[in-house]
Length: 372
Image 1 (cartoon, rainbow, N blue to C red):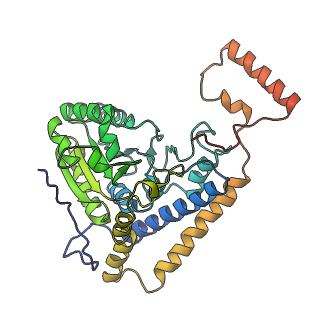
Image 2: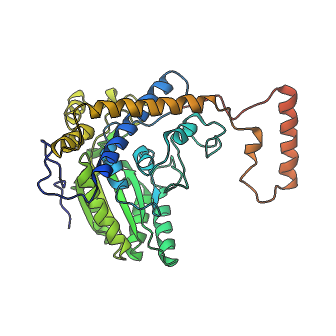
Image 3: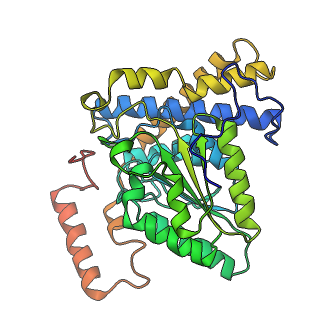
C-alpha cells in the first residue's frame, strides 16, 4: 500500500510513543556513534580534499539516519549494493574507518589497489559491501541478479541496494524492479530521496506523486518513510528484509531526506539550492533528532554526546595519519588480479614497464588529482 505521507517514529521532542525498535541500549548507542562517525569522516575528507591531500569525496551530511537505519536491519551474511553516499552502511557493520581512508588516498593498502576513485569502497568482510559504481543505476540490476542467485542456491540471504532519487531515472532502476517483481527476488530497493540529483531537483525528476509509487508498475510493494528518522527507516527496512527473507519478494522504500552539502567536492550547491531550504533541513538534522530520542530514553548522559564527537574525530584523524604513511600501489598491481595466468605479451609489456621504472625512477599509480 502506497502512502506519500512519510512514516515517522521519533517525535520532535524525542518521544517514540511506545515504539519498540528491537535494539538494545548498546545497539542504539552504536547507531548514534555510527552517525557521528559518518559526519566526522565526511567533514575531515572535505578538508583533506580542499587541502589537496585527496582528490575527491562525496558529502553525507544530513543523510546519516537513512544509511544507518537501513543497515541496522541487515545480517552480516546479507549483501549491500550501495550508492556512493553510503559511508554509514559500511561503518555500522564494523568496517574500520582506516580501511575506508586507504581508499580515499588510493594507497598500497587500498582494497582496490588504487584502481578506483576515492569513495568507491568495496569490502568482503565484515559484511558483503559490493564495489560502488559511478554510473548511475548500474548496480540495481546487479543487486537483483545477486539476490536471485542466492535464492537459487537455497540461501536465506537478502540484498539491499541503495540509490538516490536521480537513480530512478536510469534504465537500471526500471530493469531491476521489473525482474525483481517477476522473480520475487529477495531484494530491498532503498531510494534516498535527498532532494537533488546533482543540480536537478526532485520535482524535475518525476511527475509521479512519489518515487515509491513507481514500484506499483512492477508489482513491487512500496512505502515512504521519513529518512531523517533512524527508527522509522529501521522499521520499514526490517519489514522489507523480513518479507524478502520469507520468500515474499522485493520492496521499494523511499526515504525522504536532504543532503546538506554538495553532490560531491566538485560541486557548489549554493549555486542551485535555495539557502532557506538548507536552513529548513538543518532544523531537521537526523543526529540532533536521535540525540533527543536517546536523551528522552535516558540512554545519553549529559556530556556524553560531546565526548563521543571527540572520540570519533580522533578515530578519523588517526585513520588519516595511518593512511598517509602508506605509499602508493606498486607497478606490479597493474597486472595482479586480472589474469589467472599472465599472457606472454602482457608479461613482456610488464617487464618493459618495470625496466623503464628502474631507469627513470619508480613510478606510482597517480598524483592524487581528479579531473572533474
